[in-house]
Each structure stands twice: as C-alpha cells, then as structure tokens.
Length: 150
Image (tube, rainbow, N blue to C red; front, top):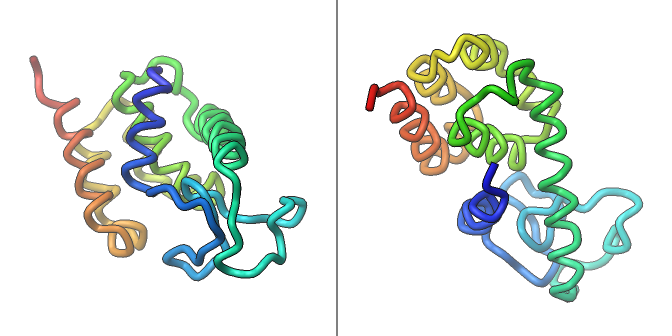
C-alpha cells in the first residue's frame, strides 16, 4: 500500500492541529486525529495546550501502523484486497478504531467476497456515515469505482 498517499488522505480528512482540541465526539485529541489516551504525555492537559510538530508526526506514524495492523485482523483477505480498498478501509479504521469498524459485519463479509459495490452501499447505512457524511460518501464512491470494470 502507498503509505504516503494514505498519510495525505488522512491529513486532508482529519486536519492537523498542534494543540489539544475536542474531536467531533467531544474527546481530547491532537495532531492528525490522535485520540489522547491514558499513558500519552498529553493526557489530562488543558484544551489548547500546544503539542510540538515532531510529537504530532510521531503519533501519526504510530496510529497509521496500528490502523493497518487492525485492518489485517478485521479483514481475513486484507493482503489480497486492491490497494484502493485497503486505503479506504485504513481511512475508516483510523477514524473509527478497530472495535467500531469490527461491528460493520455485512461490510466485512462483502469485502471478503470482493463485492465492492455492496461495500459502498453498506458503509453508507451506518451511524458513522450520518456523523461524517462527506467522508463516508467520498469513501463509498471510491469503492464503487472498484466495482466498475476497466
């Protein structure tokens, strides 16, 4: 997978803030969508606290590695998926996390069968798509393109 392209896509979707802010779900976050967890040096710090760019980059790389590893656990056929499908699912996993993406049972089943048009439809029938409709629509359209013969 083209990790650099994934980085670019995630940065566009998530934005990049060198300070602690609340995400759309109201959780303390910084950088490129990094949810602050216990154990992070930023845990418990005030909103607006500055975070150095090198730290933003460090956790972004860790978060990307985690989301790709999580995708390999969620999707049995991961290594055989088209790269575009991998980047789409990695994008979703980055935002949702493994526990929430794992709940997309029909989507996962469609992906395992290479039914990309059904994946495109199914992901739009979710709470996630209602919360981030523009992102969900863009990702759905990318799956539809996978189902169209060249």
